[in-house]
Image 1: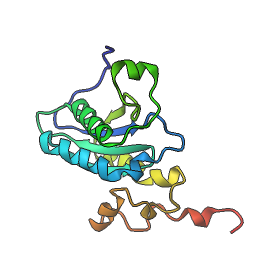
Image 2: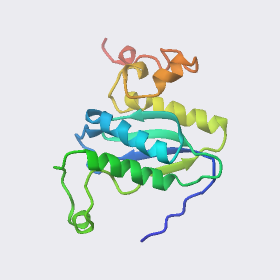
Image 3: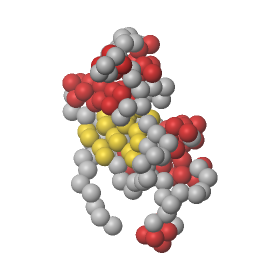
Length: 175
């Protein structure tokens, strides 16, 4: 198996991007968000972490997780979350021959993108990116319109104003 070079910093905060294997036209994550939430809760109960920011889009998610002091094992957490979600989702996805040989489902991309958060400015940049993502991908005209985001908790806590990011409808040409 390939050994990926990943930083292992116990107790650190990390930005992650996790994608479905079949992204085009796939809405599985928002259609079955209840199963994703349950998988996350199950893993968090056995392998604690704090989810500092998150956005769930139809075909991928972004989040910032902070691990407990002395713990740097984010890979196990993602493996368990992805596996728990996959087991809960009804079968029917296209499965490549290489996945079939390994007995794998075809729901998630095998890997994920991670970035070690270096400081508060880096955290803030990534939290902004997470919360802006539904607008970036055209799923919402305003950040506040996307329901599957920690943005709403950030507004409740006074971190963002409800109109943060503006309204893309104001930028539509001809209106």
